[in-house]
Length: 135
Image (cartoon, rainbow, N blue to C red; front, side, top):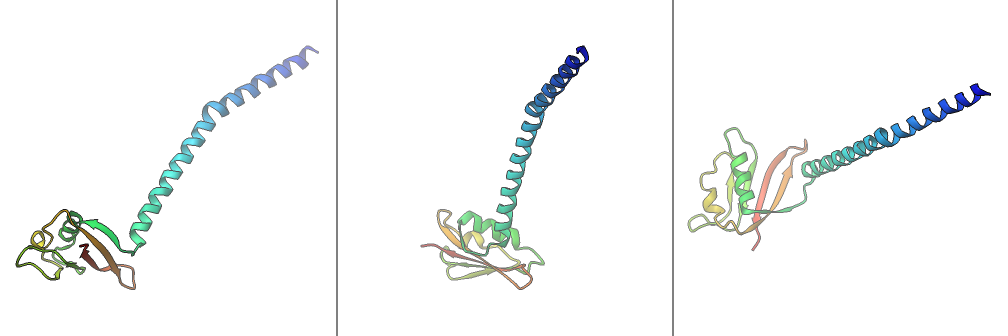
């Protein structure tokens, strides 16, 4: 009979240790992994929508200037069209490909907003970016 109680006592101690492990290690680790997976999923969704989304979006004037200066370099094949705005002598539509010298004259009011439309070709690469000033 003494062996019977010893076996039950060992079983209870092992079961308690297992429950303590589950509560102290497994559950917090599982929650952390779920939180990391959720964050990774949100990041992937944001990047995917930014890459695949071709719907027009609203951007600031400084974003227009940054986009133009980022893309307009030697060897660039993406044409960037800017409509509306501009200082005197720089009105009308402007197209930028490799030269962005007068971009600050064209986009001179940093309080304005523009509609950005990205056009992609059949292979999915960007062929042009259009900015139209919102009046």
